[in-house]
Amino acid sequence: MAFPKMFRVRQKFDCWAIERPEEVLREQLRAKGIMNRISPGKRVCITAGSRAIANLVTLMATLVDEFKKRGTHPFIVPAMGSHGGATADGQLAVLRRLGIREETVNAPIISSMKVVEVGRTAEGLPVYCDEEACHADFIVIVNRVKAHTAFKASIESGLMKMMAVGLGKREGAEVAHAHGLAEAIPQLARVLLEKTPIGLGVALVENQLGQTAKIAVLEPDEIEEAEKQLLKEAKHLMLRLPFDQIDVLIVEEIGKNISGTGMDTNVIGIGRRIGGKWKPEVGKIVVLDLTEESQGNALGIGLADLTTRRLVNKIDWRATYANVIATGYMGTGKIPVTLESDREAIRVALQGYAPDQVRLVRIRNTRDLQEIDVSEGLLEEVQSRDDLIIVEELGELGFDSQGNLLRL
Image 1 (tube, rainbow, N blue to C red):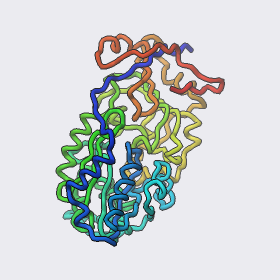
Image 2 (image 1 turned 180 degrees about the horizontal axis):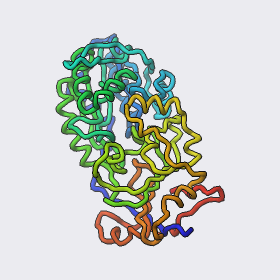
Image 3 (image 1 turned 45 degrees about the vertical axis):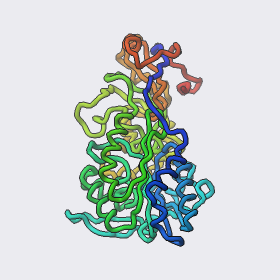
Image 4 (image 1 turned 135 degrees about the vertical axis):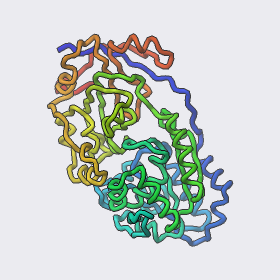
């Protein structure tokens, strides 16, 4: 079978980034006068999630340093719901793979799956909080604000979700997912803001290149409304595929460090998760591998049409199913048609298409989209656009002797 001729294309982005984010964070903390309200000797809990976020280790270490200067005792807790296999050791391992270790942030990390029920919403939903965080004197919520992969609302992924789902551990995640994230997250988070010592939010927004574009230090009563505006800014800066219609999309790797759904549905088309007509419309998705950082958690593989034996052999079913069940959406854990090699999976996906006409796109993952490979069938559209630049002609898709696709 002849494979399509490919071209490397670069997307042009009009974006900005903060050069020294730790200095911006220190300036905002001083401007808010946060430290003046905390007495020396107090225990300060700082949250850490499961996603790879630009400058996260530096910013966490900066927070620790500022609180230590005040004479307080900062510590880190994993705030990631049921991720890490819903175990304390698993969540510690997730943080280590993100570079968050006691020696890199200069603070102890206390990981536990124990929670405290701190109250109920007006609708009667139980609200949970990590036990260590709940017993601290002051909690700092740190997270990136971005579009969620499973719903659309004025509050999606960010500080409110980290409170409701992240600090709620497995129990909080199950409550939120069972009652609908869009409705449950604000309700649960409001109770946590009222009933726990949450004293500060640090919201981060990234640009299309995954760089820190904005830092917002927020008082508890500012968080909800500020996050709505930050989400609008994040969506404006959101990374996207540059085509509305794609016949075949090759994704070299998926993983929890890339997206909560392994591959971001805002990139591949959220219709695969929630149904309906959304852009881009992708005919078939081929997923080739699972990132090491995922530790076998393959949630999101069910969004693909084809995959490889290599990926399936890496799946930790316990970790995957714990995460899938907590979300309440079983489709993300289903295994697609599985072929023995990259070559076979891609060959099957391309059946029925002429090599010179198929609209084929190849990406490393849904987080790295500045440069992508496109087939000859998309070349005319690329040449007609000002936001796309042809970098080089690559020739046909290449494979090694084992049938593995030669990587980007």
